[in-house]
Length: 274
Image (cartoon, rainbow, N blue to C red; front, side):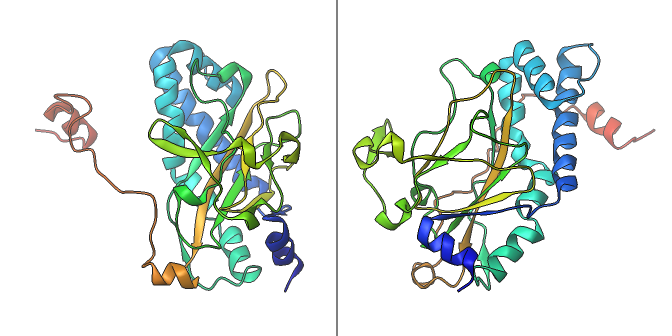
């Protein structure tokens, strides 16, 4: 067994240092900035922003609803998908974990943390939880967490409890219809360790490892990360259960904007002339 897999099996996570090209990550940042500036052009005639945090802050200040819709859409960008499923990541699972065939269950996410972007009564980090209930795929399923900026103890790091993956599914606290926060009786706050990583590093984590978002961060700093999940197509119980996933695919067919688009708008797109 190689040392990467041995560490992962023992601790419930492994940090692959410098696995991804920094230029690819810079390309994603530029793509996000372009999208934010496109949105700012709709709500403001100010000059385009030159860095992502200032663009996020400007859109947040101008129109919180538009900000929420925009950041919620970033995971669907082609550049996001490419990075989350980069050959270096899938190759690592093949080479180091010995996986011969992969499933992608769903759950691509962009994680944004900054004091200046805290939505009132809204998201500001994730509470202690395990990912298996929201995936329910292979028992050796992996969460892939990619920092898009350098993340240290003062920049809202991911925090994990080593070896907690060996304890199976732990009791959870009910939140309305959701039951996903691990009950506080099953850990101590001191059990968590911060995951300090740099651009290019990739965190591989078991779907059973308890983790959370730190809410400790320096003002005017942005913690930006991306995550996805992978299942091992040959894990025996996954095969026996016919490859389940907790994610459901649905289509919203009712028009979001009534009477849109008009025939004239469609014709303009295709440059149709009489």
